[in-house]
Image 1: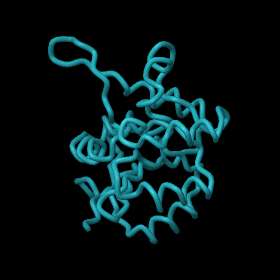
Image 2 (image 1 turned 30 degrees about the vertical axis):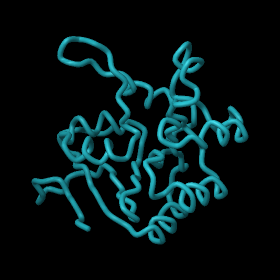
Image 3 (image 1 turned 180 degrees about the vertical axis):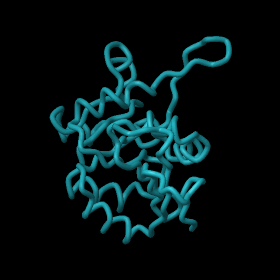
Length: 184
C-alpha cells in the first residue's frame, strides 16, 4: 500500500525516441486512453482491436449514445504503439499508462474520474485523458491526491510538443522535501 504522506510525484521528460525505448522496457503492461472526441480514427481502430483489447471508459447509455466521441482504454501492442507514435503523437489523441492491473480493473479505476461536480453540484465530464488537461492537473495536485489518482497506475505518459512527459509516484527520501521534477 502507498502512504500519501511519504509519496512524491515525479516528472521526467523524454524525446520520442527515448520514450519509445522507455515504453518498450516498461515493467507493467502498456495501455492507452484514446480520445475519440479529438481523434476521429479511434472508434474504427477500437472496433478492429475488439473488446478483449479495447473498451470504452463510458458504460450504459453514455457508451451507446457517445461511442463516436468516447475515451477508450486499449491494451497496447507494438502495432498500436507504432500507430500512436507515427500518426497521432503531435495531436491531442490521449495518454499512455503503464500498469500491472488487468484491463477491466484499470478501467474500473479510471472510470472514477470521468464525472466531477461544479460548485453548483452539477455533474460534468472531466476529460483528464486529454494531454492538455492531464499535464496541468497532475502538476497542480498534492502528493496525497496524486496517490489516489494513480491507484494501480505506475505511470502516466503524456505526449507534449515532440516529447513525452512521464509522471510516476515515488517514495520520498528522508532528505527531500519537495516534489521531484526533472526539467526539460
